[in-house]
Length: 429
Ligand code: XIL
Image 1 (cartoon, rainbow, N blue to C red):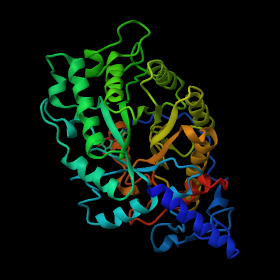
Image 2 (image 1 turned 135 degrees about the horizontal axis):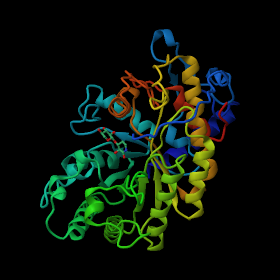
Image 3 (image 1 turned 90 degrees about the horizontal axis):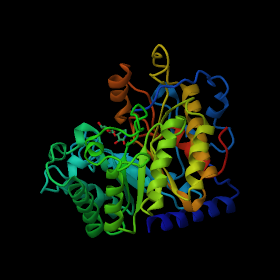
Image 4 (image 1 turned 30 degrees about the horizontal axis):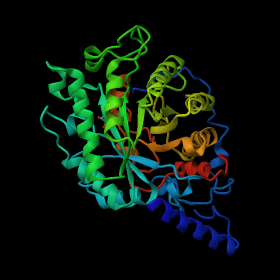
């Protein structure tokens, strides 16, 4: 609906520009430690210039505020095919809620303009939707899904099963009955609600999130789900994963079902486990794609790592979805915990190039009919989860790591231009 309309608008605008002699681009933790030591900081400064290839957005001066562009495009309308371009959003009473934050309506405007899909950063996780065995609480999620629906956007559901302690419902942690039946009831209850009340809006789900643990003997995380429903035999994937996917498939065969995990590109052990899960589910016909979280850094993982990982999923005939992209400008897991760099024109230009290259690998590697979408994990730099994550996991107290596409004041960063350039096939330099 919205996508087609916007495409027409975009095509019309492009035609007008061309007819006028203008050019189409005229104006415009869980992450692992990095072993990469190479730096390209001095080799990419050219991309900050407005005269570089495709980027002619006007850029504001850094001395007057954040380095920003004024895009003449709507990001999602720059896609070479109709794959969703998503953003994780805060809702309900979250700190940066698009409904209650002091700049909520401006946040909504930016989201509606540039994105075609939403993921709830928190409020569609297990404990929010299903706090006690006989209670489902959909009010907050309904507000978000309703917002998406009324603005022509879809929603990627996140996540039906995830081990993270803060959002596993208490009743599941001490469940005494038939765990498989309970899990089936959970998945069925959630998927059915959105299928029934918002037909065609929640088009996909992360059915299971982060089941891999490279430290475990068989590579699978020892969660409450694993403990209750482990693999039935050596070499099998945990039974709970199959139960959850089967329940989702049975409830709504029309939506795409994803297995989602982190650090599954450069880390070959984690990638292999991810692929093993996907293959086992694919053999039963109950998975549609693999989600790559992609909480990444400026120099790690490499573009080849992304290409290789995406390609292996493509070769299985499944969809590839970038589910949670952010690119921190500092990697706290590097030796010595690097100091916060200055976020200057040179660094914003390098980050623009990095975003562009990642988006380019995605569209270059994944065929149109296997593109599940491309989602960034948050709207503005200041709302990113990474500062807390780095403090907790790496003891790094960074005031900001500038990982997203918009500045705190909601102005667009050069990185936004980088993604658009890649989607339009215009190169990254
Ligand atoms: C994060 C949220 O962004 C934070 O607000 C919350 O405190 C913790 O969870 N991988 C995932 C997401 O799959 O659900 C996580 O989201 C980030 C890592």
